[in-house]
Length: 501
Figure (cartoon, one colour):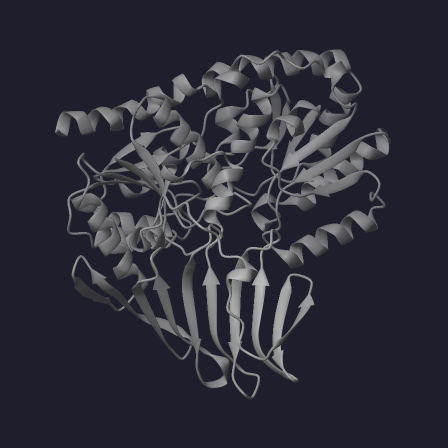
């Protein structure tokens, strides 16, 4: 079994989880067993899986595993299933149902939008919360929180789908520092950290795997020590989705992040390092000369449907529509995207810019909105929420602006080109110069060359026939992003396992 490790499958996916889902589909297409593996607790993860058309066996979660809930489908608890304290009156406030005895609040029930129970809070005679019962979105009591002095969380209790206690965690000074698996296979196990629990979980997966276990670690910093402390035999590959140094412009001298130091310190546990770009692998090899193998594998691929999709003509797209697909984060340098667009809009007043992505940084989001206001571009620039329907986003756009400070690859560039959208990008480490063929299906610019990017965009937008030629070239790049090309890159790792077996 191949496990692709991340923290959680949120509703707003980052590029890493997008890449994992694409990879999962690729492995399944080639009949190789694989799952996304998550280690954080969530009551809505399976609902998010439905959003991304994943079934319950496409993902395994640490808490689900010990709660025996990986493939759970059962009765969902409704408000009417809850036994209210005797002699109480119920008052409804939106999705909250409060139960009072006279004016004393005894219990508060919060329901999901579909009226199924989400959580129940119990109160003492002084109206202090003492206990919070949390229900998984699928309907069972999943976690109980016990509150102590000053309403601080003192203990978490986790239950399986039959209501049996399976895991306890204790808190000291708000720090979760004690974990106990209760009666797991007839024994209790004690851990002093979540990382130690993670290690036990990984060991259990490997020991119970009928095949050779392979972990592809996509969010490295969250599980490094857990992986390195494993006792069971498993292959471990670490995928560098981003840069491994603080200043990607100076990869040979900049301070390294702890991740690369961890790989180097535990080389015997690292079967290989994977990067979506050869450029970063070359920089790593030149600076550190690691003993472990290195693999250049695309971070994602396009579906057969998109590979064979009929090209959308430039004339069929929204005239002068530009886009950027990026979360609101300093890495994306969206202030430059806005300033580039300002120069474009001055020359082409009908031009519009849509920025698609969830907010990672609220203060930065406010600054960007303020910048748009200062530039009087409110009617031309729209910040749009994250969307899982990327086809509509790309198929209506004429041009893509990309102004990141650094990247591990730039999945959005690949997606844009595969939908026939030429890309204007800074020439940064890493990704754009390995994806974009400058002057053919897009253009590369020195960082902060705002006027140069704007002038080239204006030139293209004002010459729709030339824009159509570049769009045709962008579509022509699709084969290099195909599932077949991605699978060929994965084969060395796949075949290594077969040889070892």
